Image 1 (cartoon, rainbow, N blue to C red):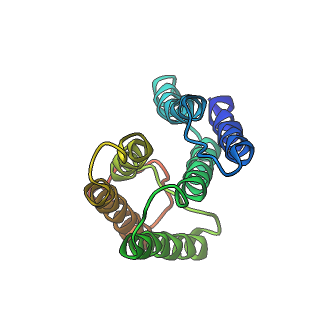
Image 2: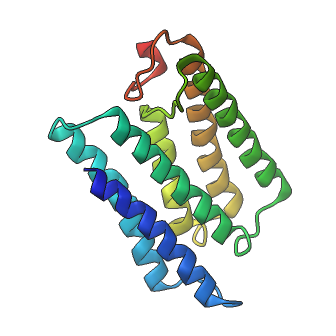
Length: 179
């Protein structure tokens, strides 16, 4: 399933190329959204197939997390100039990123590896974040952002709690209730 995950890196790169080629025009075209939906779909499909076929691995989980993070960073880079984010929104994004950084630092100190986890809340947060570029034009930006932020903040705090409390690394842990 790693080849599906790797395709997400190529999809993120293609989104950057479209952004670059758009120049001063908005890159948010039909082709852009088709590639984006393909990236999101690949994220859903690779995890589901890996679990269904029982071919999960720590490497695959880490690669999936890296691909997710790459896509998120690329989308933020592309969207920030085109979405009228308020300062409070950017500060809340920074807060979630800071919580994630603390969790990664603690995980690295404990396990000598990066510890991005595949919890249910991370999956729901990812789904909310994935939906954001598709819906922000249809609903109030503050409402759409608040829903995504709430999901992302809960997931980041849960990951921090799991990382602090766990005795051994399990990237596929589903919830803090399992620690």
